[in-house]
Image (cartoon, rainbow, N blue to C red):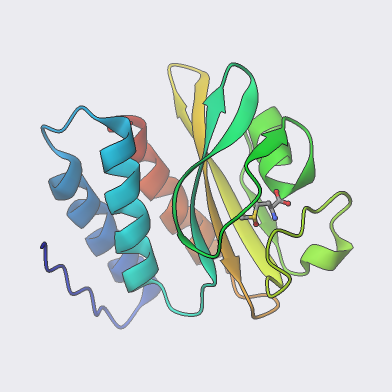
Length: 159
Ligand code: SME
């Protein structure tokens, strides 16, 4: 077992620590699924107030469920559908304070109130999206978005 205890007091330091832990955890390991599985576990253990953390992979132009922590979730999401599909289609992070107000939001877990989805892109190609859900409305700040984009950068070399 790896023991990464990340207990930074501010978000910026926490995401920097998380990014370097992720870098260390994935270094030298070419298996994308193994790296996504460890990344989901590390994010889940580190970030407070989440009810779901994980990945949807780009499989031939459709998002397919990847490694995650949380409740069993929808398996396939078309590009352009819901928060994940919008992030996949636009290659833009989606930070949603109130998922009920997001057109086409896919309610995999009714407990989810807010959501942050960041695309993971290598050489202009979408590999996957990282999806974080919280039971608290407005849980994700601009700092969370910037921090998760850093994680996505590390992951773009690891999956
Ligand atoms: N709510 C997401 C679907 C994935 S689950 O949250 C795990 C969406 O609208 O894309």
